[in-house]
Image (tube, rainbow, N blue to C red; front, top):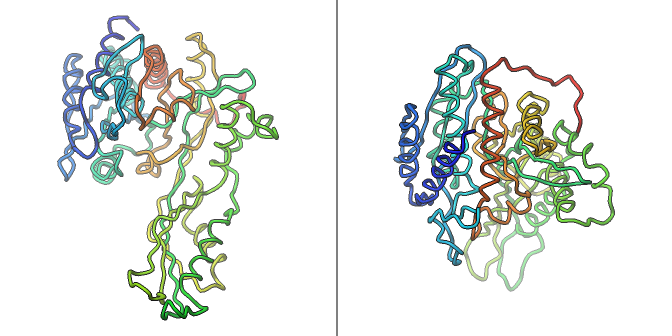
Length: 439
Protein backbone atom coordinates (compact mmCIF):
# COMPACT_ATOMS: atom_id res chain seq x y z
CA UNK A 1 0.00 0.00 0.00
CA UNK A 2 1.16 3.52 -0.72
CA UNK A 3 2.74 5.35 2.22
CA UNK A 4 0.52 8.36 1.65
CA UNK A 5 -2.64 6.27 1.84
CA UNK A 6 -1.44 4.47 4.96
CA UNK A 7 -0.70 7.82 6.58
CA UNK A 8 -4.24 8.94 5.72
CA UNK A 9 -5.62 5.76 7.30
CA UNK A 10 -3.67 6.45 10.50
CA UNK A 11 -5.10 9.98 10.43
CA UNK A 12 -8.59 8.50 10.10
CA UNK A 13 -8.04 6.35 13.18
CA UNK A 14 -6.75 9.37 15.05
CA UNK A 15 -9.85 11.36 14.09
CA UNK A 16 -12.13 8.53 15.20
CA UNK A 17 -10.38 8.36 18.58
CA UNK A 18 -10.84 12.11 18.98
CA UNK A 19 -14.64 11.70 18.84
CA UNK A 20 -15.97 10.92 22.30
CA UNK A 21 -18.48 8.18 21.53
CA UNK A 22 -18.80 6.88 25.09
CA UNK A 23 -21.82 4.58 24.95
CA UNK A 24 -24.05 6.33 27.45
CA UNK A 25 -23.82 9.59 25.47
CA UNK A 26 -25.32 7.93 22.39
CA UNK A 27 -23.44 10.19 19.98
CA UNK A 28 -21.96 7.70 17.50
CA UNK A 29 -22.99 10.22 14.84
CA UNK A 30 -19.75 12.14 15.48
CA UNK A 31 -17.63 9.15 14.43
CA UNK A 32 -20.06 8.38 11.60
CA UNK A 33 -19.54 11.89 10.23
CA UNK A 34 -15.77 11.37 10.24
CA UNK A 35 -16.25 8.20 8.20
CA UNK A 36 -18.67 9.88 5.82
CA UNK A 37 -16.07 12.56 5.05
CA UNK A 38 -13.39 9.92 4.52
CA UNK A 39 -15.56 7.92 2.14
CA UNK A 40 -16.60 11.06 0.26
CA UNK A 41 -12.92 11.81 -0.37
CA UNK A 42 -12.74 8.49 -2.21
CA UNK A 43 -16.00 8.69 -4.10
CA UNK A 44 -17.89 6.27 -1.85
CA UNK A 45 -21.51 6.83 -0.88
CA UNK A 46 -22.55 5.98 2.67
CA UNK A 47 -25.78 6.12 4.61
CA UNK A 48 -26.76 6.63 8.22
CA UNK A 49 -29.36 4.17 9.49
CA UNK A 50 -30.96 5.64 12.58
CA UNK A 51 -32.10 3.30 15.31
CA UNK A 52 -35.48 3.78 17.03
CA UNK A 53 -33.62 5.53 19.84
CA UNK A 54 -31.84 7.92 17.48
CA UNK A 55 -28.42 6.26 17.39
CA UNK A 56 -26.32 6.33 14.21
CA UNK A 57 -25.28 3.19 12.33
CA UNK A 58 -23.20 3.83 9.20
CA UNK A 59 -23.45 1.57 6.15
CA UNK A 60 -21.81 1.63 2.71
CA UNK A 61 -22.19 -0.95 -0.04
CA UNK A 62 -20.20 -1.89 -3.12
CA UNK A 63 -21.95 -4.16 -5.59
CA UNK A 64 -20.00 -6.98 -7.24
CA UNK A 65 -20.25 -8.54 -10.67
CA UNK A 66 -21.51 -11.95 -9.48
CA UNK A 67 -24.12 -13.43 -7.15
CA UNK A 68 -21.51 -15.08 -4.93
CA UNK A 69 -21.99 -14.89 -1.19
CA UNK A 70 -21.48 -11.33 0.10
CA UNK A 71 -18.80 -10.02 2.47
CA UNK A 72 -19.56 -7.79 5.44
CA UNK A 73 -16.99 -5.69 7.30
CA UNK A 74 -18.43 -5.17 10.78
CA UNK A 75 -17.22 -2.99 13.65
CA UNK A 76 -18.78 -0.65 16.21
CA UNK A 77 -18.39 3.06 16.87
CA UNK A 78 -19.23 3.31 20.56
CA UNK A 79 -16.71 2.81 23.35
CA UNK A 80 -16.81 2.29 27.11
CA UNK A 81 -16.13 5.31 29.27
CA UNK A 82 -12.54 6.25 30.14
CA UNK A 83 -13.01 5.67 33.88
CA UNK A 84 -11.76 7.81 36.74
CA UNK A 85 -8.08 6.87 36.62
CA UNK A 86 -5.74 9.40 35.07
CA UNK A 87 -4.42 8.49 31.62
CA UNK A 88 -0.87 9.02 30.37
CA UNK A 89 -2.48 10.96 27.51
CA UNK A 90 -6.10 12.17 27.52
CA UNK A 91 -8.39 9.30 26.44
CA UNK A 92 -9.84 11.17 23.45
CA UNK A 93 -6.70 13.01 22.37
CA UNK A 94 -5.57 10.48 19.79
CA UNK A 95 -2.03 11.37 20.83
CA UNK A 96 0.83 9.75 18.92
CA UNK A 97 4.02 9.35 20.89
CA UNK A 98 7.04 7.24 19.91
CA UNK A 99 5.10 5.19 17.39
CA UNK A 100 2.10 4.52 19.66
CA UNK A 101 -1.42 5.92 19.23
CA UNK A 102 -3.19 6.41 22.55
CA UNK A 103 -6.89 6.63 23.34
CA UNK A 104 -10.16 4.91 24.06
CA UNK A 105 -11.17 2.72 21.14
CA UNK A 106 -7.69 2.05 19.74
CA UNK A 107 -8.29 -1.68 20.32
CA UNK A 108 -12.07 -1.84 20.76
CA UNK A 109 -12.89 -1.28 17.93
CA UNK A 110 -12.12 1.97 16.13
CA UNK A 111 -8.86 0.50 14.89
CA UNK A 112 -10.91 -2.16 13.11
CA UNK A 113 -13.29 0.48 11.73
CA UNK A 114 -10.33 2.34 10.23
CA UNK A 115 -8.82 -0.89 8.84
CA UNK A 116 -12.14 -1.77 7.20
CA UNK A 117 -12.44 1.73 5.76
CA UNK A 118 -9.01 1.36 4.14
CA UNK A 119 -10.04 -2.03 2.72
CA UNK A 120 -13.21 -0.46 1.36
CA UNK A 121 -11.31 2.23 -0.52
CA UNK A 122 -9.21 -0.43 -2.26
CA UNK A 123 -12.36 -2.41 -3.06
CA UNK A 124 -13.86 0.71 -4.61
CA UNK A 125 -10.94 0.89 -7.05
CA UNK A 126 -11.43 -2.80 -7.85
CA UNK A 127 -15.10 -2.13 -8.55
CA UNK A 128 -14.23 0.71 -10.92
CA UNK A 129 -11.96 -1.66 -12.83
CA UNK A 130 -14.60 -4.42 -12.96
CA UNK A 131 -12.61 -6.69 -10.64
CA UNK A 132 -14.94 -6.77 -7.66
CA UNK A 133 -16.86 -10.04 -7.94
CA UNK A 134 -18.70 -10.03 -4.62
CA UNK A 135 -20.96 -7.54 -2.91
CA UNK A 136 -19.19 -5.98 0.07
CA UNK A 137 -20.87 -4.02 2.87
CA UNK A 138 -19.14 -1.77 5.39
CA UNK A 139 -21.06 -1.55 8.65
CA UNK A 140 -20.08 0.48 11.72
CA UNK A 141 -22.71 0.16 14.43
CA UNK A 142 -23.93 1.82 17.60
CA UNK A 143 -24.49 0.61 21.15
CA UNK A 144 -22.35 -2.56 21.09
CA UNK A 145 -20.98 -1.87 24.55
CA UNK A 146 -24.45 -1.88 26.10
CA UNK A 147 -26.20 -4.82 24.44
CA UNK A 148 -26.50 -3.52 20.84
CA UNK A 149 -30.24 -2.86 20.98
CA UNK A 150 -29.68 0.37 19.04
CA UNK A 151 -27.18 -1.33 16.75
CA UNK A 152 -26.88 -4.90 15.54
CA UNK A 153 -29.95 -6.22 17.36
CA UNK A 154 -32.02 -3.63 15.51
CA UNK A 155 -30.22 -4.06 12.18
CA UNK A 156 -30.38 -7.86 12.23
CA UNK A 157 -34.12 -7.72 12.77
CA UNK A 158 -34.97 -4.95 10.30
CA UNK A 159 -32.40 -5.78 7.60
CA UNK A 160 -31.88 -9.52 8.01
CA UNK A 161 -31.63 -10.08 4.24
CA UNK A 162 -28.29 -8.24 4.20
CA UNK A 163 -26.66 -10.90 6.34
CA UNK A 164 -27.89 -14.09 4.70
CA UNK A 165 -25.05 -16.44 3.70
CA UNK A 166 -22.50 -13.65 4.19
CA UNK A 167 -18.89 -14.01 5.23
CA UNK A 168 -18.45 -11.50 8.04
CA UNK A 169 -15.19 -10.02 9.31
CA UNK A 170 -15.70 -8.65 12.81
CA UNK A 171 -13.98 -8.10 16.15
CA UNK A 172 -12.81 -10.52 18.82
CA UNK A 173 -9.58 -11.94 17.39
CA UNK A 174 -6.39 -11.24 15.52
CA UNK A 175 -4.17 -11.34 18.61
CA UNK A 176 -0.99 -13.32 19.20
CA UNK A 177 0.13 -16.20 21.37
CA UNK A 178 3.55 -17.87 21.17
CA UNK A 179 4.03 -21.53 22.04
CA UNK A 180 7.00 -23.81 21.42
CA UNK A 181 8.63 -21.13 19.24
CA UNK A 182 5.55 -20.93 17.01
CA UNK A 183 3.61 -17.69 16.62
CA UNK A 184 -0.17 -18.18 16.58
CA UNK A 185 -2.80 -15.63 15.67
CA UNK A 186 -6.12 -16.35 17.34
CA UNK A 187 -9.08 -15.83 14.99
CA UNK A 188 -12.53 -16.01 16.57
CA UNK A 189 -14.44 -18.63 14.58
CA UNK A 190 -17.38 -19.27 16.85
CA UNK A 191 -19.17 -17.92 19.87
CA UNK A 192 -20.94 -19.35 22.88
CA UNK A 193 -24.70 -19.04 23.23
CA UNK A 194 -26.68 -17.69 26.16
CA UNK A 195 -29.42 -19.33 28.18
CA UNK A 196 -31.20 -17.19 30.77
CA UNK A 197 -32.68 -19.42 33.47
CA UNK A 198 -34.95 -18.70 36.42
CA UNK A 199 -34.92 -21.04 39.43
CA UNK A 200 -37.79 -20.96 41.94
CA UNK A 201 -38.27 -22.74 45.26
CA UNK A 202 -40.98 -22.76 47.91
CA UNK A 203 -40.66 -23.85 51.50
CA UNK A 204 -41.87 -23.25 55.01
CA UNK A 205 -41.78 -19.65 56.15
CA UNK A 206 -41.75 -18.38 59.70
CA UNK A 207 -40.16 -16.20 62.33
CA UNK A 208 -36.38 -15.74 62.12
CA UNK A 209 -36.11 -16.62 65.81
CA UNK A 210 -37.40 -20.13 65.12
CA UNK A 211 -36.32 -20.93 61.56
CA UNK A 212 -37.98 -23.97 60.01
CA UNK A 213 -35.99 -26.82 58.51
CA UNK A 214 -37.64 -26.77 55.07
CA UNK A 215 -36.65 -23.25 54.05
CA UNK A 216 -37.00 -22.15 50.44
CA UNK A 217 -33.59 -20.51 50.59
CA UNK A 218 -31.92 -23.78 51.58
CA UNK A 219 -33.56 -25.54 48.63
CA UNK A 220 -32.35 -22.75 46.34
CA UNK A 221 -28.80 -22.88 47.67
CA UNK A 222 -28.73 -26.64 47.11
CA UNK A 223 -30.00 -26.17 43.55
CA UNK A 224 -27.49 -23.45 42.76
CA UNK A 225 -24.66 -25.60 44.13
CA UNK A 226 -25.70 -28.49 41.91
CA UNK A 227 -25.89 -26.22 38.87
CA UNK A 228 -22.49 -24.66 39.52
CA UNK A 229 -20.92 -28.10 39.84
CA UNK A 230 -22.58 -29.50 36.70
CA UNK A 231 -20.17 -30.04 33.76
CA UNK A 232 -23.00 -30.23 31.18
CA UNK A 233 -21.49 -33.27 29.44
CA UNK A 234 -19.58 -30.99 27.08
CA UNK A 235 -19.39 -32.31 23.52
CA UNK A 236 -16.33 -31.79 21.38
CA UNK A 237 -16.49 -29.60 18.28
CA UNK A 238 -14.15 -28.73 15.38
CA UNK A 239 -12.75 -25.52 16.88
CA UNK A 240 -11.89 -27.27 20.14
CA UNK A 241 -10.46 -30.28 18.30
CA UNK A 242 -8.09 -28.04 16.31
CA UNK A 243 -7.07 -26.20 19.46
CA UNK A 244 -6.43 -29.39 21.43
CA UNK A 245 -4.37 -30.91 18.63
CA UNK A 246 -2.19 -27.81 18.30
CA UNK A 247 -1.53 -27.38 22.01
CA UNK A 248 -1.54 -30.97 23.34
CA UNK A 249 2.02 -30.65 24.56
CA UNK A 250 1.37 -27.41 26.41
CA UNK A 251 -1.99 -28.50 27.86
CA UNK A 252 -0.45 -31.67 29.27
CA UNK A 253 2.22 -29.83 31.26
CA UNK A 254 1.85 -30.12 35.00
CA UNK A 255 3.36 -26.68 35.49
CA UNK A 256 2.67 -23.65 33.35
CA UNK A 257 5.74 -21.51 32.80
CA UNK A 258 5.03 -18.55 30.54
CA UNK A 259 2.12 -16.13 30.53
CA UNK A 260 1.13 -17.40 27.10
CA UNK A 261 1.09 -21.02 28.29
CA UNK A 262 -1.19 -20.07 31.16
CA UNK A 263 -3.45 -18.26 28.70
CA UNK A 264 -3.54 -21.26 26.34
CA UNK A 265 -4.67 -23.54 29.19
CA UNK A 266 -7.25 -21.06 30.47
CA UNK A 267 -8.66 -20.59 26.99
CA UNK A 268 -8.97 -24.37 26.62
CA UNK A 269 -11.04 -24.57 29.81
CA UNK A 270 -13.25 -21.71 28.62
CA UNK A 271 -13.78 -23.31 25.22
CA UNK A 272 -14.46 -26.81 26.58
CA UNK A 273 -17.11 -26.10 29.19
CA UNK A 274 -20.27 -24.00 29.50
CA UNK A 275 -20.14 -21.43 32.30
CA UNK A 276 -22.76 -20.51 34.89
CA UNK A 277 -23.18 -17.06 36.41
CA UNK A 278 -25.60 -16.19 39.21
CA UNK A 279 -27.00 -12.81 38.25
CA UNK A 280 -29.63 -12.21 40.94
CA UNK A 281 -31.08 -13.86 44.04
CA UNK A 282 -34.45 -12.74 45.41
CA UNK A 283 -35.77 -13.75 48.86
CA UNK A 284 -38.00 -10.76 49.51
CA UNK A 285 -37.35 -7.71 51.68
CA UNK A 286 -39.09 -8.51 54.96
CA UNK A 287 -36.98 -8.18 58.10
CA UNK A 288 -36.81 -10.89 60.76
CA UNK A 289 -38.85 -13.27 58.61
CA UNK A 290 -37.86 -16.55 56.97
CA UNK A 291 -39.26 -16.26 53.41
CA UNK A 292 -41.50 -19.01 52.05
CA UNK A 293 -40.11 -18.54 48.55
CA UNK A 294 -36.76 -17.84 46.88
CA UNK A 295 -35.69 -17.47 43.29
CA UNK A 296 -32.54 -16.79 41.29
CA UNK A 297 -31.70 -15.56 37.82
CA UNK A 298 -28.91 -17.48 36.09
CA UNK A 299 -26.97 -17.05 32.87
CA UNK A 300 -25.50 -20.15 31.24
CA UNK A 301 -22.98 -19.55 28.46
CA UNK A 302 -23.53 -22.61 26.26
CA UNK A 303 -21.10 -24.18 23.80
CA UNK A 304 -21.51 -23.13 20.15
CA UNK A 305 -23.44 -26.21 19.01
CA UNK A 306 -25.64 -26.69 22.08
CA UNK A 307 -29.33 -26.13 21.46
CA UNK A 308 -32.15 -25.16 23.79
CA UNK A 309 -33.36 -28.73 24.09
CA UNK A 310 -29.86 -29.83 25.18
CA UNK A 311 -29.95 -27.41 28.12
CA UNK A 312 -33.56 -28.35 28.91
CA UNK A 313 -32.54 -32.01 29.13
CA UNK A 314 -29.66 -31.18 31.49
CA UNK A 315 -31.81 -28.99 33.77
CA UNK A 316 -34.58 -31.58 33.84
CA UNK A 317 -32.12 -34.31 34.82
CA UNK A 318 -30.53 -32.06 37.45
CA UNK A 319 -33.72 -30.94 39.19
CA UNK A 320 -36.36 -33.59 38.48
CA UNK A 321 -36.33 -34.95 42.05
CA UNK A 322 -35.68 -31.65 43.82
CA UNK A 323 -37.77 -28.78 45.21
CA UNK A 324 -36.43 -26.51 42.48
CA UNK A 325 -38.58 -25.36 39.58
CA UNK A 326 -36.75 -24.07 36.52
CA UNK A 327 -37.63 -22.06 33.43
CA UNK A 328 -35.52 -20.95 30.47
CA UNK A 329 -36.64 -17.36 29.99
CA UNK A 330 -34.56 -16.70 26.87
CA UNK A 331 -32.13 -18.63 24.69
CA UNK A 332 -29.72 -17.43 22.02
CA UNK A 333 -27.86 -20.23 20.28
CA UNK A 334 -24.16 -19.86 19.66
CA UNK A 335 -22.49 -20.52 16.34
CA UNK A 336 -19.36 -22.00 14.82
CA UNK A 337 -17.78 -21.39 11.43
CA UNK A 338 -15.82 -23.29 8.80
CA UNK A 339 -12.30 -23.32 10.22
CA UNK A 340 -10.88 -24.62 6.94
CA UNK A 341 -12.41 -21.94 4.71
CA UNK A 342 -10.22 -20.02 2.31
CA UNK A 343 -10.51 -16.88 4.41
CA UNK A 344 -8.55 -18.61 7.16
CA UNK A 345 -5.99 -20.19 4.85
CA UNK A 346 -5.30 -17.05 2.88
CA UNK A 347 -4.80 -14.86 5.95
CA UNK A 348 -2.06 -17.25 7.00
CA UNK A 349 -0.47 -17.10 3.56
CA UNK A 350 -0.55 -13.29 3.54
CA UNK A 351 1.30 -13.13 6.85
CA UNK A 352 4.09 -15.20 5.32
CA UNK A 353 4.24 -12.87 2.32
CA UNK A 354 4.51 -9.95 4.76
CA UNK A 355 7.56 -11.63 6.33
CA UNK A 356 5.67 -12.17 9.56
CA UNK A 357 4.86 -15.89 9.50
CA UNK A 358 2.22 -17.18 11.86
CA UNK A 359 -0.27 -20.01 12.23
CA UNK A 360 -3.95 -19.11 12.36
CA UNK A 361 -5.63 -20.62 15.43
CA UNK A 362 -9.44 -20.66 15.39
CA UNK A 363 -10.99 -20.23 18.84
CA UNK A 364 -14.35 -19.65 20.47
CA UNK A 365 -14.66 -15.93 21.14
CA UNK A 366 -14.37 -14.56 24.64
CA UNK A 367 -17.47 -12.67 25.71
CA UNK A 368 -20.26 -11.55 23.42
CA UNK A 369 -19.89 -9.83 20.07
CA UNK A 370 -22.37 -8.47 17.55
CA UNK A 371 -21.96 -11.74 15.68
CA UNK A 372 -24.47 -13.35 18.04
CA UNK A 373 -27.32 -11.54 16.29
CA UNK A 374 -26.49 -12.92 12.84
CA UNK A 375 -24.91 -16.29 13.58
CA UNK A 376 -28.06 -18.01 12.31
CA UNK A 377 -28.08 -15.92 9.13
CA UNK A 378 -24.48 -15.63 8.02
CA UNK A 379 -22.33 -18.37 6.52
CA UNK A 380 -19.19 -17.55 8.50
CA UNK A 381 -18.23 -14.89 11.05
CA UNK A 382 -14.54 -14.37 11.76
CA UNK A 383 -13.21 -12.19 14.55
CA UNK A 384 -10.11 -10.78 12.90
CA UNK A 385 -8.55 -7.49 13.91
CA UNK A 386 -4.92 -8.40 13.24
CA UNK A 387 -2.19 -6.75 15.30
CA UNK A 388 1.29 -7.64 16.46
CA UNK A 389 0.20 -7.63 20.10
CA UNK A 390 0.02 -10.62 22.46
CA UNK A 391 -3.51 -11.61 23.42
CA UNK A 392 -2.63 -11.27 27.11
CA UNK A 393 -1.54 -7.67 26.52
CA UNK A 394 -4.69 -6.85 24.56
CA UNK A 395 -6.81 -8.02 27.49
CA UNK A 396 -4.87 -5.70 29.80
CA UNK A 397 -5.52 -2.68 27.57
CA UNK A 398 -9.13 -3.11 26.38
CA UNK A 399 -11.65 -1.26 28.59
CA UNK A 400 -8.79 -0.16 30.82
CA UNK A 401 -6.75 2.97 31.37
CA UNK A 402 -4.14 3.79 28.69
CA UNK A 403 -5.71 1.78 25.88
CA UNK A 404 -3.33 2.11 22.92
CA UNK A 405 -2.05 0.56 19.71
CA UNK A 406 1.42 0.54 18.18
CA UNK A 407 1.35 2.05 14.71
CA UNK A 408 3.34 -0.80 13.21
CA UNK A 409 0.65 -3.18 14.50
CA UNK A 410 -2.10 -1.06 12.99
CA UNK A 411 -0.33 -0.83 9.66
CA UNK A 412 0.41 -4.55 9.63
CA UNK A 413 -3.23 -5.36 10.37
CA UNK A 414 -4.47 -2.97 7.70
CA UNK A 415 -2.24 -4.48 5.05
CA UNK A 416 -3.16 -8.03 6.07
CA UNK A 417 -6.89 -7.31 5.87
CA UNK A 418 -6.52 -5.49 2.55
CA UNK A 419 -4.66 -8.41 1.01
CA UNK A 420 -7.01 -11.05 2.44
CA UNK A 421 -10.33 -9.37 1.71
CA UNK A 422 -9.45 -8.06 -1.74
CA UNK A 423 -8.37 -11.56 -2.67
CA UNK A 424 -11.65 -13.05 -1.45
CA UNK A 425 -13.77 -10.33 -3.03
CA UNK A 426 -12.03 -10.57 -6.38
CA UNK A 427 -12.31 -14.26 -7.13
CA UNK A 428 -14.50 -17.32 -6.64
CA UNK A 429 -14.22 -18.63 -3.10
CA UNK A 430 -13.61 -22.32 -2.47
CA UNK A 431 -13.83 -24.30 0.74
CA UNK A 432 -10.98 -26.52 1.85
CA UNK A 433 -13.00 -28.27 4.54
CA UNK A 434 -11.99 -31.72 3.30
CA UNK A 435 -8.30 -31.06 2.79
CA UNK A 436 -5.50 -31.47 5.29
CA UNK A 437 -3.70 -28.47 6.72
CA UNK A 438 -1.18 -27.94 9.44
CA UNK A 439 -2.53 -27.27 12.91
